[in-house]
Figure (cartoon, chains in turn orange, brown, green):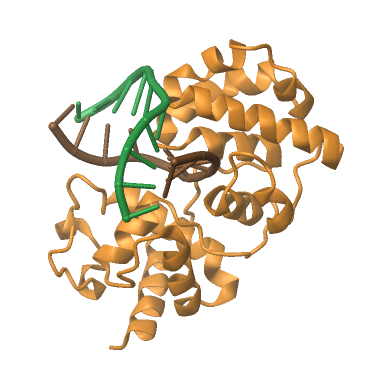
Length: 211
DNA sequence: ATCCCGAGGG
DNA sequence: CCCTCTGGAT
């Protein structure tokens, strides 16, 4: 089976395997999704989900985050790690959202990428999950690892991986595809110990021994 | 010691 | 391409 066919087969099987796949970082609220996604860098979603309820009560809108006192936002998100970078990103992004976008998270790739701390990964998550747009494939650590393990691409940089995957998957499924890969990565094909014996798509995986 | 649903800077 | 930023779980 050639690569495009195999990729479509993987997608079809993942759809069947995880019919109700929901990212725990998903929100209807674009700002909360944006902040959650920034917090998720090098951090499990369990820990993100532990701080976000209180965080969104304390900072209900972009203005509140933008006006957070020095050190206070940092302390509020400390447990998610990289808190200095993340606080700077959240504050800076929310300032621009208030000043340029009237307090509403923008819904275009170009405008999202202008926000400090937002690159393609975060922008794709917001566009796909908050605004229902298929602007691209979300490339996070799971997608990176799985696309390598499954032999979908040997590229290493996120941009090249996204370009490769975008060519293999129909545009209508871009957001869903990355979503399913991430779900599968967390469920059975994780970094430490991939449980290939429990994997329903093992037959579609080259298992080249690549880690 | 290694990894976690990244981004920015050199 | 590389490096740094950070706490928490395993």
